[in-house]
Amino acid sequence: MKLRNLFLLSVLALSSLASCSEEEVFNSDLEEIEIIEKIEDDENKEETKEEIDSTSASNSSSNSSSSGSSSSSSSSSSNSRDADSLDPYYALGAEDKYYEADKDMVRGSYYSSLDLFNNVKVGDLFYEKNNYGDIEHVGIVENIQASSDFGPLIRTIEAVGSKVQYCYIDDNRFIENNSRILRLESIGDSQINDVLTFAKTQLGKPYSFDLHRANNSVNSESRYCSELIYAAFLSIGLDFTIGTHYQAGNCILPPEIYESSLTSEIWLTKKFLSFEALQKSRHLWNIRISNSNSSKIANVSYNRTTTSQSNAINYSSLERLQVIDEIDSENYKDVNIYENREASNIVASFVDKGVRVTTIANSLDASNKSMNIWFKYQRA
Image (tube, rainbow, N blue to C red; front, side, top):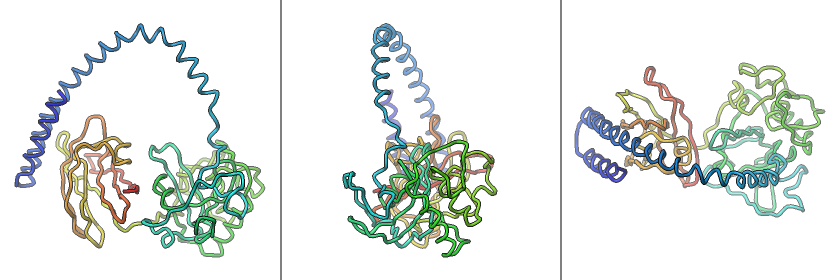
C-alpha cells in the first residue's frame, strides 16, 4: 500500500508542474485529496488488522517479562537527579568572575549570524521556550561586552540551576532554546541601573521554585527565574502582572512576563515570512506566503501537507517539500496545502546568513481565516 501511495503522489506531483491557472491548480489538488483519502483509508484498515494480530501474539510474552521490566524501571528512577540542582553549560557563577575552578571549561561563546552585540541592549529580557513548549525561562541582560577567558560575552543574571548567577547568551543558546528578546521601551537608563542593582543583590541565593510564591522582597531567601525578574522590576514600580491572568498568591511564570503589556519583542532579523489563510475546501487550504521585507527572499520552501509540531519546529521529516525560487520584496505566493488528518501545522522556511528562519502556524480556523503564527531560528 505504501509503495502505491508513493507512486501516486509522485505522479500527482509531476502533473501539478504543468502550466495552468490558479483555479485549475486548486481543483487539481482537490482531486488529489480524494485519491489520498482513499489510500489512507485502505492503509488504516490494513494497519488495524496488523495491530490486532501483533497484540494477540505478544500478550503471553509481555506477561512473562512484566516483573523484569518493573525492577528495571525502579532501578532507573532511583539513580535520577533533580535537574534544577545542575548548573547549565552557560552558567558563569555567582561571583563577578567567569568560571568556577571546580568546573571543566567545556564551553565557548559563538556570535555571528544573529548579530546579538548590535541587537541586544543592557536591561533587555530574554525569554526561552524549548521546542516542545513545556519548559520556559527568563533572565536579564547585565553587560553587553563582558570580558572572559573565551572572548567577549553578553552577560546575564538568571535564577537557574542551583542559584541566582551570572550566565551568558550567544547564538548557539539563542537558537537551541528558541529564545526571544524582550524590551521595556518605557524606561530609561537610570531605572535599568536600579533594576540591575536589585538583581545583583540576589546573586548566590539558592534556586527554589514555589507554585504559591511571587516574593518581591529584596530579602527573599531564594529565587526562581521569573520571580527574580518580577521582583527586580517591581522594585522600581513596574508590575508585569497588570493586564494578565495572574492571580495573587500564585507564582509568577515566564509567559506572564512575555505577554505583559510592558514588554515588546525585538526581532533579530528583518527577514521573515508570514501566512494568510485565503480559503478552505474540504481538506485543502489555500495559503498566501508573504514577504513584507525590503529585499527579496530566495529559495523559500514549504511543506505541501500539514505536519506535526515537532517536525515543523525542527524542520525535519518533511516529506512533501516544495521550493519557491524567490518571493520579491512586498510580494507573495499563493500555495495549496493539504490538511493531514493527524497533524495541524503549516511550515515555510528559508536560510539567511547561515541561519534557517522558519515560520510555523497552527490552530487554523476556516470560519474567520485566523491562525497562530510564530518563528524559529536554527543553525542551517
